[in-house]
Structures are given as C-alpha cells and as structure tokens.
Image 1 (spheres, one colour):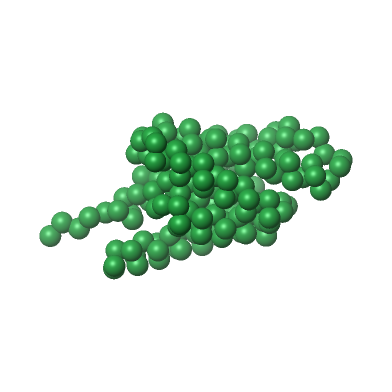
Image 2 (tube, rainbow, N blue to C red):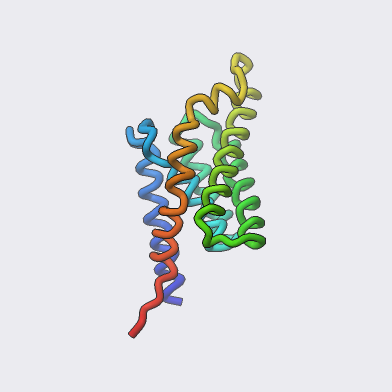
Length: 164
C-alpha cells in the first residue's frame, strides 16, 4: 500500500516536471526530449492500462494547452499511444532498450500523424505531415535515444526493493 502511494506521488512529480519543461523555453531546444510522451509510454508499459489512460488524458491536456495543437486531438493521440504501447508491452520484452526505442519512435510518429491530420482538418492552408515532421525529426531522435535512459531511471525509482 505504501509502495503504491509512493509510486503515484513520484509519477505526479515527474509529470509536473515534464509539464514544466514542456512549457518553458526548453521545449524549443532540440536536445530536450519530449518528456510528456516518454512519461505516457513509460506509464502504459510499466504501470498498466488504468494508470496509462489517466496519464495520457493529463499529458494530452498539457500538450493541447501549452502548444499550438488541439486538446481533443492530443488526448486522442495519447490514448491511441497508450493502447498501442500497452498491447506491445504485454507481448514483448519491455525491459529491452531496443524495444523501448522502437516503441517510443512509433509512438512519436503516431503523435506526428494525429497532429498533422488535425491541423489539416482545421486549417486548409497546410502542406500535411511533411510540415510537421520537418520541424520535429531532431526531437524524434533525441526522444528515441533518451527513452531507454529515462525508462531505466524511472523503473529503478518506482520498483526499487529495499533490502534490510
């Protein structure tokens, strides 16, 4: 019980830190990974479907409020990512760094696809996914490279066992 309480508080603090970095000028730096996406992927993979859905709604709301996107589209993209990652985590080895990178890359591409479709629907003068992807390929690479490090760091924090 106490362990679950600690995990929920630690996830909340990590979410707040990720949201803070998403709204500050650090979001324009290409070397800062998309921490909200990493947190959604980690929660869906390691914490389960229920926590993943909760985290995706919160992270999608943060993404929609603090970016130029649409809140509904960002929540939908994060929910889609949670269901995809959760189903893959049940089938494959979620402890593998290569799997973490592949799943995070596919999740990022899904986010780009949903963003480009929602922008195309609401703005007619838009050139499609090429415009969205041309500005975010550096962010994609840094997010994919940072995924195993971020996941191992959070995994050790949340699932560390005390040996007395």
